[in-house]
Image (tube, rainbow, N blue to C red; front, side, top):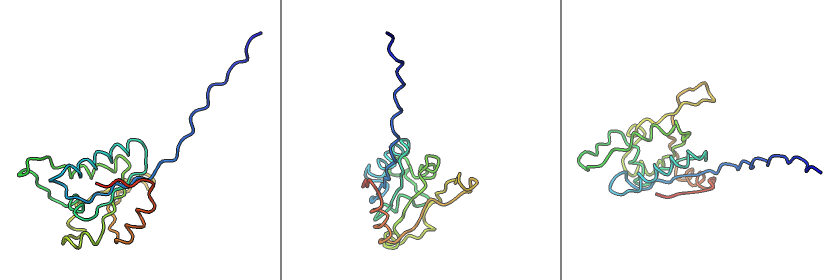
Length: 148
């Protein structure tokens, strides 16, 4: 007697993407932390996770305009932030108090934007300045926090 035809295996269930927040606390140069954070952000985005960045303490300097690294002998990676929207990374939370403590304003930061495909590809800002208490609430909403 012939065996009944077997049904193909069911596709694996899609898992719900996790919310990852990459917390940048250090200045852009002088250590490897800032560059490593950027590389890990790109990896997380490639795996379709919900990826956002937070900039606190000296991490706010990572987004400043006009970074010149020639005298340091290292590559300026700050323009890479502007490309993250192409990878679905559109939320950059910058802590207001950290900026104020370092004498920075929103005008001191580079423009980081993305094209919102759900809104006719309108260009929108990625950087959101939030208070320290708002940053705490944002952190509590995440599944994974990675500190750099």
